[in-house]
Image 1 (tube, rainbow, N blue to C red):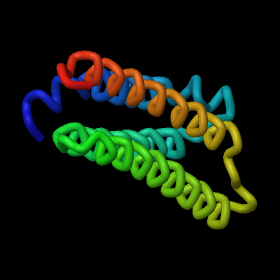
Image 2 (spheres, one colour):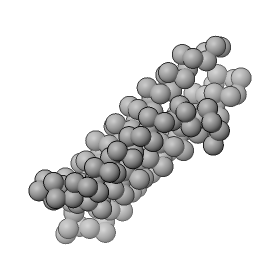
Image 3 (cartoon, one colour):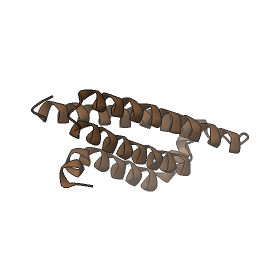
Image 4 (tube, rainbow, N blue to C red):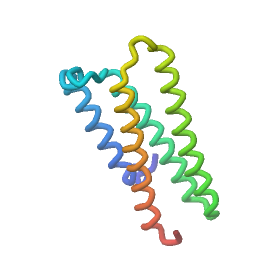
Length: 133
């Protein structure tokens, strides 16, 4: 990954590291709230990787002189992230029918929104900085 791409993605990386630090160090607090630590750590990792892939797709779309290529890459990344998260949730629900951790699942849903908001706000910032946007 290039230096410029990493610089723009840095807030997401910091957010991911801070959240994992909280999830690892706050195991007792998560247990009091009824949140399974493994569910939120794996959910956070999945969302981070999907956001990274989505960011890279958007960056490649920005390099293309055709503005429709950027729009297609953003739509594709949003749909991919949504469907992968839905499939992961369905797999988790199917495997853990009796021991389903709803607070952990709802936490991951909230994290999905936060990662999506972060990605969109960073893309808007990159678009404003781009001279021909």
